[in-house]
Length: 52
Image 1 (cartoon, one colour):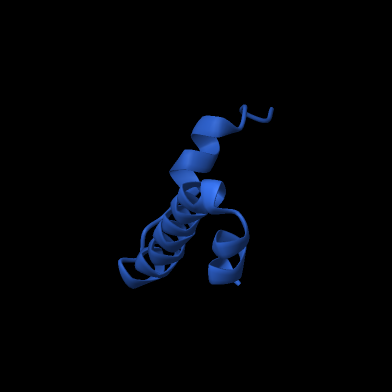
Image 2 (image 1 turned 120 degrees about the horizontal axis):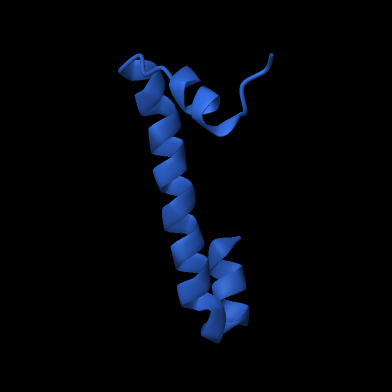
């Protein structure tokens, strides 16, 4: 699908490549988080306001 879209719109090829790289990065981080047993709860508390 990526090859077809890039062939149809050569000017958007770099744009598609950058999106593909970003999606690969997030996929890798998803599996790495489980492998290294990362905890994301602290980031949730930083973003969300405290509930009283």
